[in-house]
Amino acid sequence: MRLTSLAAVLVLGVAAATLPACSSDDPAPSFQSGPSAAATAPTTADQSAAPDARDGLGGPGASASPKPAAKVLAAGNPNGRATVPAEARAVDTSKPTRTIGTGTPASCTSAAVVKAVAAGGVIVFNCGPAPVTIKMTATAKVRNANGPKVVLDGGGRVTLSGQGQRRILYMNTCDQAQGFTTSHCQNQDHPQLTVQNLTFADGNSTGEKVEGGGGGAIFVRGGRFKVVNSRFVRNRCDRTGPDLGGAAIRVLSQHENKPVYVVSSTFGGASGQGGSCSNGGALSSIGVSWVVLNSVFSHNEAIGNGANPAKSGTPGGGSGGAIYCDGNEFTVRLAGTIVENNRANEGGGAVFFVSNNRTGTMKIEDSTLRRNPSGKFETRGFPGIFFLGARNPTVTGSKLS
Image: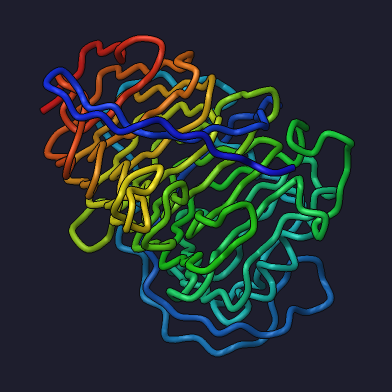
């Protein structure tokens, strides 16, 4: 299946700015709740080595001396009070399908992660008691016939690093290389991918062309996807392009248009830690709904220029400092969430939302959006937001400044 783009004409006015957008021709299972805990951002290093014969287990490899964990993984907005529905909670991993590592940092390798993700199931890590960084030497890819659940739980002690060189995790139900499992790849209920209690660092999808690129840390098309208690830092994707985005995450379709859940997670979090891409310094999607609960987006940036469609003489992009959403009928809900200190060269320093057929809606509940400069345009009365949809965003119990 191929995603195509439509565009609107940029009109800057007193009441609001009206910007271009694109849409998709294509249009997620119930998740069990479970523990979500753990340790701080990893400080140890790892070099990839061949896994041993057991499913998902790492083999010998070099590592630095581990340091004890100082505190639990700090992800999300601790003051967020949004209710998390059962299907959005962490998956119970008390009975894992497979384990990466044999109790030491050296046993937790890139090759072991790649093998475990391809095999699917509920995956946990056994890398020792201290935080560990696994330096990915290849992108871990979900095989569409395996699962149907694919759960990656770092226990709060694991960072997966793209080393600034590659995307970290990939799932695409319409990628023949990962196997077709139905006749309607863009709208099937599997695989059901969950990432929880993990840090994704230094992912980089620059130059990736499949499905238009984007998704510096994680790229998803089809099935279902959710993120729980995880951190995304210093991820990147292409610097320019009118419809390309998602330094941390890019999603293109979900089963029956069900939402992607992002729960108690942090994107950026401090100066120098945010994501950077042409559009969507954290999240980007086409025709996909989002429910973002008790999370934090800060210091992310949309650095393209020329907007969408690209103005004459420009490469395009620069919208959605934190979040870039485009398509036809979709929804976005932010609840218990902080969006601050993000920026966009063009429009929507915090959020860029364009529903081409004006059916999309957005809700902001008990959240704070502040200091999200839009370089050239935003919707009057909604600082940091550019919005074209069925009606203006619904804002309750929130502060926008």
